[in-house]
Length: 213
Length: 321
Image 1 (cartoon, one colour):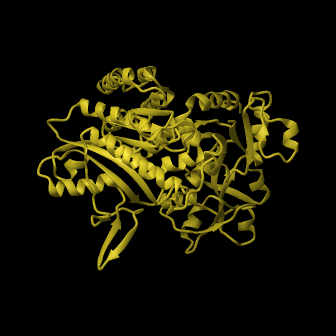
Image 2: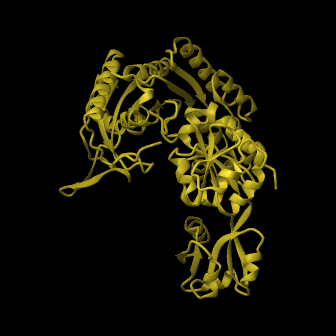
Image 3: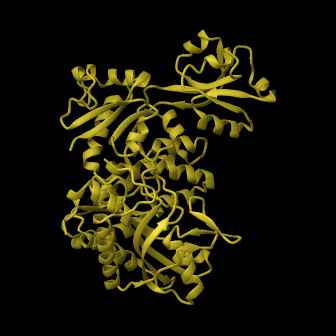
């Protein structure tokens, strides 16, 4: 029976694919160009799924994929029952509260009705509780930085890697909510019942991916 | 691949037959081990937690039986002046699942050894482990793995470092994920953050036979845990020679599931490729003192519903009747 590893699509996936080149778990380039669902890797009997980051933890928690790589921001947001075997340290970014240039945290605190747009409601709620603030959360799934510019929200909570997107939209970071990086996750059942099958693959990924930044 | 089970499953023909057969086989096994059957009421009137199936009986909020151990504890503390010894149970419990594919109504068979504090010793833990070792054979599970753990390996260092309840909860959550890097994160600024992270790394580093205990050498709390380590070594020496064929025994030092309940040795039954443990148990000496009785207790529960799901998805793991 083959083992499935879930790799993320998107920004994190792009970084990951570069790091996987020439490793035993690199993806078959020809299969990647096709529409094949299970992509062969350089290791026989190990195949990969390419999944959207927000869906990936569900596949691993359900045991469909034995291992996966996903950002810690997504893990914290979904809080699924899975194992988090390593902080792979790549894909590092900050989760920040960002506002139009010139706005301060003190001004936000004094607003009678604060609205924050975010993909990360759980993390934002936790931060608001810690700060003793209340706010209306505006759930958005993409282009969150547009919300303050168009009057949908006073600020945003989003991931910031270089700050280039923020700068282009006239936004600045005024509070750090946390840090995110790629994590190696495993299905609880697969790892605990068959560690001799899963652990060696996890070790290959850790060796290939950690300390590469 | 796991199947999404209806939350209130109707068991038809083959599955219904398996349920009847496995309940009978396991209750016979437990009876042969000296357990007397108890059948607590399906309705629990004590304060009930979130996740139980609650309803009003007149003006009283009650719940369907959500946990056998709690239901039995209520019965025996009310009815027995002395601990009842070995008891067994079988039937359904109802509670909201952690995993979305698990049913609300689930069938369980289990046993409990309840003793006066002065009578309790390590022998009853070993006997419980031996009894669990007989479970795969009784239900025709061809290959199985038993994980031995000990709640004290995590509990003692946290108590020694005087972690707050919130910090304790966060460390347990990190260890449950097998994520030592999260321990460092959640204890940021605490003087014991690095020590407890090193301990967590030692606990998660091995999952295997007797050699796994050597991982404790790397823990800053190795001295504090030397008695617990000795007990685990003794358990292995007693159990390995009598291990049935097709059953593997592993030490899982980072087992923290139910850490707020278990106080000593823990047991988990797995099958190769199973998504969840098929039975779990251990020592929980805090339960009866909380209810005003100076008794100690240990037990395990076989998750029959998970076994039924496994038999559908992995029939190759079971002997055909």
